[in-house]
View 1: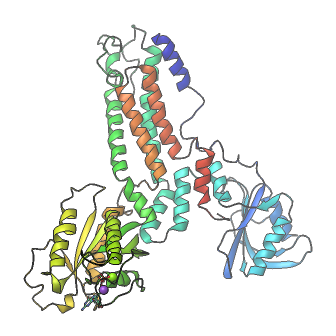
View 2 (view 1 turned 135 degrees about the vertical axis):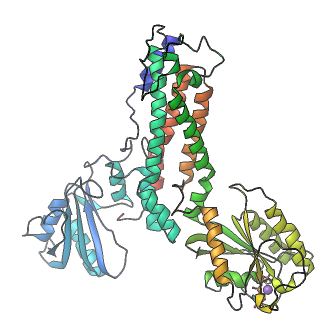
View 3 (view 1 turned 45 degrees about the vertical axis):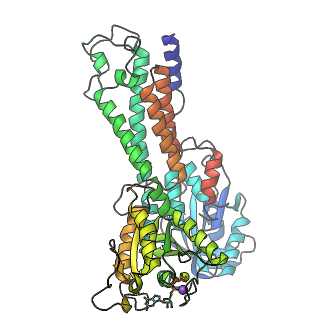
Length: 524
Ligand SMILES: Nc1nc2c(ncn2[C@@H]2O[C@H](COP(=O)(O)OP(=O)(O)OP(=O)(O)O)[C@@H](O)[C@H]2O)c(=O)[nH]1
Ligand SMILES: [K+]
Ligand SMILES: [Mg+2]
């Protein structure tokens, strides 16, 4: 029975699937498609516009548009007169670049036309290209999709490229560039290698395990001998039913590596929210009693009049949110109604919405009027909101809080007068701007903790897709460790490896590719 299972498992293990194949099942096969062209720089009037082509007819198109000249030197900028092949009419004097495949962005023959950026020039060149047989306009993301299909980029690098194009803040740019440089993919390949080695051990055991005459050293690998292959009596799972397979099988080094992999995956998963926050923006919510100056601060940080400011308490009712770049981090900043009880139904609804938004905050900017600390609303706010966040045990899901005492301009030089004991806080005056630099620095530190710091941290998981595959891999390693059946153990390792492979794009389904490439514009 064991033999049957083992043979099956061994056959499956040696199946045609290869680790980290870069060409996905659904992506267009290299070179097989039409030659595509598109405007790759932004739309509208500009100094220089870049039009590019990719595909087997690129060289032909370049020759036709620049006739009677021949192809320029590969990867050198050359000045050429572009003419319409149908009428011979001159279109522009342009710089052209010829990138014969596979040394190009897509891996195919590519041409770049750097033309003058007037709309008539651009449309003239696009129309001229459209008249060349074998050429058609590119679809959104098609250049990058071809680069992926030809193994020029893996899937996490493609995602990094999409994020780089959309990056709006410095930290987003850093994170995207690191992902485009392949850091996450590199990590995944290392992890996949560890799993592959463990799988090789299981497969070797499947092949030799029934043979009681296993000789010493047969399974020596990398200097470590598996302990069941030494002079010790041969141990099979049937003889040691209480031991899990991983305990029977792994050499000490491989065992340590699988354990280390589990720890690494766990750490990355705990960090998962940070990379996603950095990609899509951290939620920062300004809260406090009425008239503390919350709306004044939101306007100051966003440098625009988002909210109405007035001396009347209860001015803000709805949650007003605005995207801002705070110290290089992308933030969705929310202004909320001042927290107080016993008010009319409209303001009460505002307070309810404020509390609801507070629950979603990654970082709470808690604001009090420094000249009014002894008031019941200030004391109540400190005792409820500030104290409850302070009481949270630090974990990735816990919220962070910065306490800001506003209106410092109203204080005497000695600072806040008698009042409640205060946790650590910052002094600020929205009126004079004093204390703003200190607040921005504190925000930078808090946001680096909330989003991760892409200049120092290990590469982060930036999408739910990454989190899903890492969790899947971790779960499969758990099944492997507990498995008392060789075939199941091998299968669990294959599942673990499959998740890591799919993270970088091997064996990805067409729908996932469609979702990822949808992020790109035409010409990219
Ligand atoms: N002296 C002084 N006044 C300030 C400062 N910041 C805000 N104010 C004033 O305080 C009043 C209330 O400011 P808002 O920004 O509307 O306060 P709020 O917390 O949004 O108020 P609600 O939305 O009603 O809860 C306004 O008259 C502001 O001009 C400050 O730093 N110093
Ligand atoms: K107000
Ligand atoms: Mg307000």
